[in-house]
Image 1 (tube, rainbow, N blue to C red):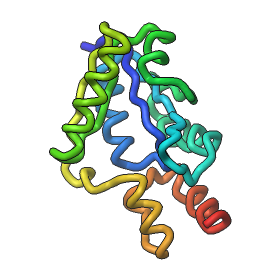
Image 2 (image 1 turned 90 degrees about the vertical axis):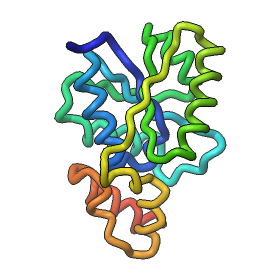
Image 3 (image 1 turned 90 degrees about the horizontal axis):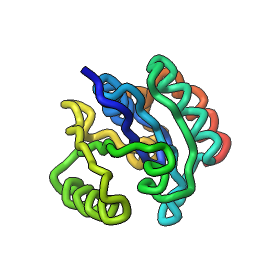
Amino acid sequence: MKCASAIYAGTFDPITNGHIDIIERASSVFDRLILVVSINPTKLSFLSIDDRVLFSKKATSHLKNVQVIESRDLVARVAEKYDVRILVRGIRSLSELEYEKQLSHVNRRLSPKLDTIFFIASEGKSLVSSSLVKELAKHDGDVRMFLPPSIFSEFMNKFRFEA
């Protein structure tokens, strides 16, 4: 049985197999999953917002109940705009849990009806991060195992051209 809608927000710079793991699992629980590609002013993104949205759409095209949007706003405001009461977050480590708990409390203060559901990274996916992918690619490491096949070549072309 699925429940209404949820939001999974992140910078997705780039979207990784770790993200896809969370997205696939969340999309099996919710009728609609809104993937919010965010601009985080505290992070310097490698990919443009347009590229991150495009890669996210390509990587999730097999999931018919996933909608990809771009936002420059607080996720709590996006949730209100789309009438969503559940945020999905992925947890890779115990240290991440503390930070995610703080975010959950802040989002709840901003929007009291907003709850967060945590998905623990699947075994073998907890080491995957966008930062790791970019660092490996920068040093000519093989990142194929960390990226969805649908975006691998395009990401590497962008990386070679812009790095």
